[in-house]
Amino acid sequence: MAKVTKSPKACTVNPLKMSQPVGGALAFMGLRGCMPLFHGSQGCTSFGLVLFVRHFREAIPLQTTAMSEVATILGGLENVQQAVLNIVKRAKPAIIGILSTGVTEVKGDDVDGFLVLIREKHPELADTELVYVSTPDFKQAFQDGWAGTVATLVEKLVEPVDDNIRHPGKVNVLPGCHITPGDLDELRWIFEEFGLDPVFLPDLSGSLDGHVPDDFVPTSLGGIGLDEIRAMGRATHTIAIGDQMRPAAIALEAKTGVPYTIFDRLTGLGPCDDFMALLSKISGMPVPVRFRRLRSQLVDAMLDGHFFFGGKKIAIGAEPDLLWTLSSWLEEMGSTVQAAVTTTESMRLSEVPTDEVLIGDLEDLEMRAEGCDLLITHSHGRQAAERLGIPFLRMGIPMFDRLGAAHVVTVGYRGTRDLVFQIGNLFLQAQHAATPDTWRQDIPLTENGIPAVSSHHA
Image (cartoon, rainbow, N blue to C red):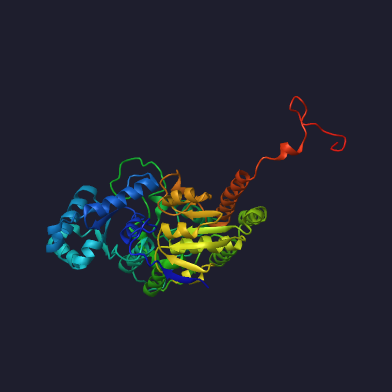
């Protein structure tokens, strides 16, 4: 059982974590026709905008109430009202997702009260959903902002069900912030192979999967629609991925009576087997043959790769659910998690297979990664890996120095198989780089440089 500690440093030297508003904004981007709105200064929004553009390499819908020093002191009602009216006039969104920031949280703006006054004064906003989420950026982290936003969407938008009518085969899926658009595409394919109709909240695979739209859209390109969210109570089951989605799953069951199952991860042989068994039970059909073959490929990949994973020491810096996913799976592959640094508190941290989990920054991770065989974190960890002289695997957000971040797949049999190859190849590359090319010294050469084969060798 891991000991969970917090860094005693007075300041963050090299940040690992990102703020709650950024996580909440990304969750809102998984809704169709949505415009996330930061209630704070322009700098807060610019930071999130640049981060998402560099990671996804797409146009990102994100607006600000542009709070100044005077507006912050006097209150942000006018700024929120003007921002909402401008967005509705220019972008015509189906929903505006409003997220607080540190400056407005410290001031204590009653944004829910603001929205009541704004609706009373502007009846033309009746067709636009306005959802506010409290996401102070001076506490907690990216994962908390995402989880809180999804739970709020469930509480405010999902309609209660009184008649207990369910749609056969319809399944709600609540993915954590560590699930990429590529992961969502893989999961959708798996569900559909079982004859199921998955509804993802949020659904980044429709909005940030890197496709070119036919026309310019000022809001999010795709994702789950408001009608689909309201009808989530008609599903037969809810599947939550990551412990961060537990509050949203509980809220959905309390409101609609839809039972839920939480998968702490979908990377690894055992979790994938459990996932397939549940889908088979929900659909009433046996596991398709193609998944049996993919499972066999994963087992073979694990057999091929365990020689290179065994005994390796790993350092990981990530959000809690991603840290849990990677550390648990790597332990199953025979590796040891020597250093584990995360961003915020979570019930899963004490179960991470290591001696200590530190809530800290990348400087803490670098200090603990001395002597490790692999460093895993987002792109800001590349300098630490270079200084330590160890292989580096980019995981999480932001990943700005590689293409295709949105299409990384690590879930299911196929995603786990490819992760075995990706990390195994890093170990192989490091092994060959460290091994001197001595074979030529062992074989005598002729005057022309041709290996001389003796009768003994023959």
